[in-house]
Amino acid sequence: MKIVAVTACPTGIAHTYMAAEQLEKAARSLGHQIKLETQGAMGIENELTAADVRNADLVIFAVDIEVEKKDRFEGKKILKVGVGEAIKNPAAVLARAGA
Image (cartoon, rainbow, N blue to C red; front, side):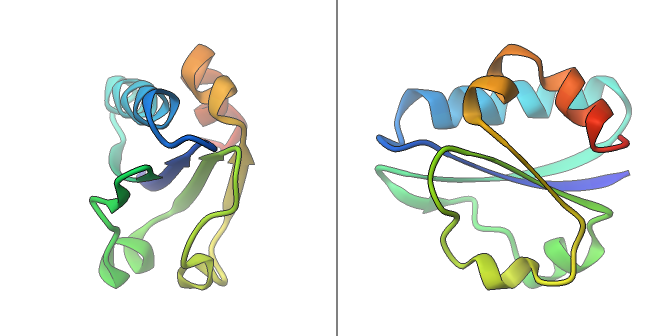
C-alpha cells in the first residue's frame, strides 16, 4: 500500500518528528511504502508532491493542529489521529486505516 502522511503539533518541534518517525517505522515493517510531510516550527518540510498524493492509497493526518494546504488531499481517503496516538501506537493507527 502507498501511504502519505502529514504530522503536525502546536509547537511543531519534537512530537511532529517523533510521530513521523514512528509511522515510518511501522509502515515499512508492514511492507508499505510511506512518504511523510512534517509541518511545524520550520514550516512544511518534505512537502508531498501532487504525484505523491495522487498515487497514495491512503492519507494519514497525525496532527493536533490544522493541516496547511489541506485542499491537496480532496477526494482521498483520510484518517485523522492525534500526534500522541501516532507516537504511542503507530501499528494500531495503520490497522485502523486498513493498512
